[in-house]
Image 1 (cartoon, rainbow, N blue to C red):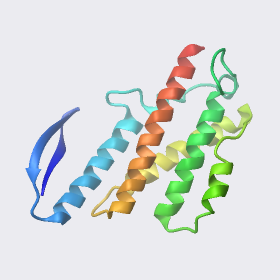
Image 2: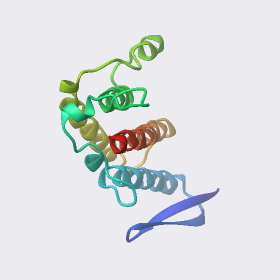
Image 3: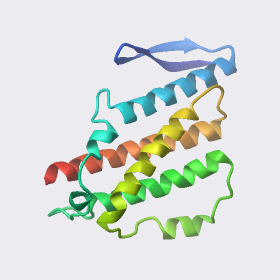
Length: 165
């Protein structure tokens, strides 16, 4: 099997082509790549780290800025909602029906939820990072990738909303 692989040197991510004869090596490499993704999200090596993006008062996070469709707290509620659903699946917990999941996708919040949501988001990202060890089957790798991509997308939105202030 030929695949594109990434490896870390210092603060940079480099690419190379590899031939894999042993699929266990590939799954171990995939888990390492997922961990690097969560390192980037949490530590902010070449993007603002999530902790710095979310460093603000609850009052400021609860304000709806001109031209923005929702508050930072609303956006954070949404990303934590999905993150928790995917983490529950990774933990092997019973899932709620899909239609119920989508029905609760976006909800209005108040500023007092911001601190709790910020902590849940950071703890969930750390939990996902810790799950990136050893061999991962395709389903687990896919769920971890979803968490990382979804988080990154919304961190970008949160950073934009913060900058509008």
